[in-house]
Image (cartoon, rainbow, N blue to C red; front, side, top):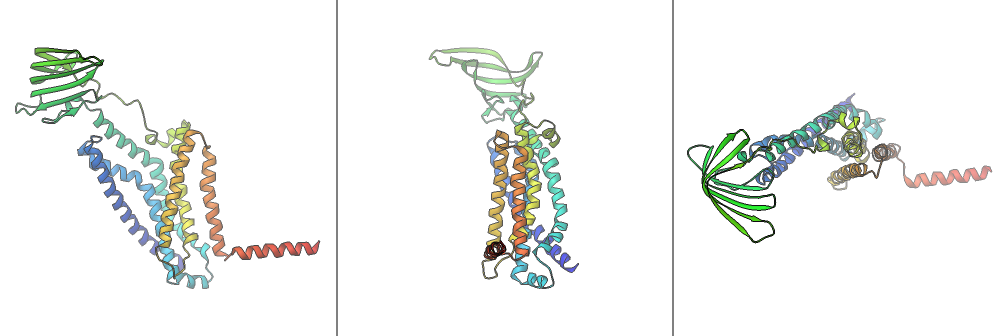
Length: 372
């Protein structure tokens, strides 16, 4: 049908343009934030591109929903302003007739949002956590950068080694400050080398001194040495004991549905349900007065989007804390939004007015009284 094809073509152009703009903005913001985190030592600077890609991929369900919502509102608002909708309405079409062509266009987007939210989102979060963990738990020797102070994996030591042309296994002017077992020690040496012994990996220091103090006391112990060995980097690659819930596969959330996992599951399912509701909301609120500002509908769309997704976040925390049941939240929020938006759409399709409804109800009550 001409009506359906014209709506879908314009909607596709608008959707593509909005998606490109949003992805560009998010990529720029993600790059700035990732570079800042890398400069603070949270990520490996060489992994910035990967982390940025995984982060943008994790945002894609939200970006697709937002792009579809803005595209629906901007396309239909333009058709109302240019009186194209008046022509279609005169041919027997109403606002509810837009549901079929828009849903026909949007169902691939719904499918992609569902796949991203249920399958790709936890995978991308897991990849980000893996890269972060590998960098945080790298060995003490891997952390040493010539000419720079570097902190150990457990935060108990600070290293400094000057650059040595003989290779990475040796260094000159070594400095180590540590806090271990209730003692603060400062060790310096003219040179040092790495040796692999049966007990583990050791940093062997030559011709230096060691200053030791028990925490809470003022006594200092100074000792000099010709050769001194300190064990480093044995447990740097141990596995993490804490697994973030947003990295768990969806099947794992369903198989062991505790409160925290139910909250995460409500967020993933909510991304798909919100995308469906946004299409109906967009159809219902697109009718604009040509005399009004063209950006009013887009401002309203942004406000609606922000409120909806804040409610998703709030519901996730409520479910995780046990304040609200999982199914009750899905029914109340998404079901409530669906009913309100459907009623709003029916109101525009049938041209209902609050005053007319009140007068009709009053007349109905009066006629019932006369019959009695």
